[in-house]
View 1 (cartoon, rainbow, N blue to C red):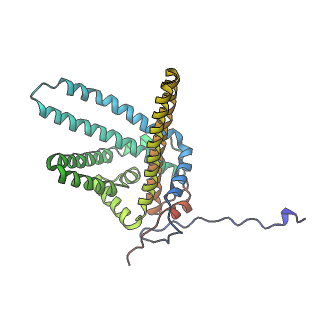
View 2: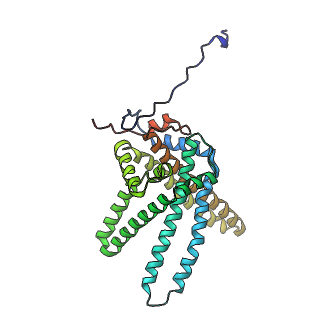
Length: 299
């Protein structure tokens, strides 16, 4: 029998090179978004504490909404304009808070892929350094949302169509804005232009990743529906058991939704870094290359 020590050492496989800005790379087989999602989850598992960021943001949002709700209740009759003002103020507050914690999570992903060891404190600290960009982008995105909603209310059917299409266009255009702000601290308009450029020129198959994430969201919704049915059936047998099952299943689904949101954030950061020629040590570059088809640069 041949001695194992006589065998030659295995040749390590090297990941595909990171493309320089504007450089096209060939697609590797049929691009699949699932490989990138799995790779993002592998990186996120090193930073599980960052999953608490959306929870903290949600709690702060609830606290900030208390005076807004009180204001709605206390508005006297005939002062409808106050409702409008309170609604706009509430939307801006929620927009700033959600943007801040989204940038915090993206900053944590950037830190991990830069070889660091992010914490909740370091991620929020990085987002705080970019507070002007955070507030600016929140104002812009909320304004767009209010305008689209006004169109829907004003023009009914045509407004609904225009609002839906406009919302989809803005969502696509702003796909990379949060990772860009977390990394480069650009003002809202330059960040939006860079996001559009990155999406258009390099990541024509980013939609594949989004579709995979949407599939997971649908799966989560189905799981929630099944959980409700289970709790209702248990309630006919034992109320206490139904309450316990409802709490456990509700907590599990809530946690799964937080994880899915964090994976989406990590995926966007990884895509943006890879497209910009930055290293992604927390993500397998082979998974990214197999997940994305890059549009060849125009000669």
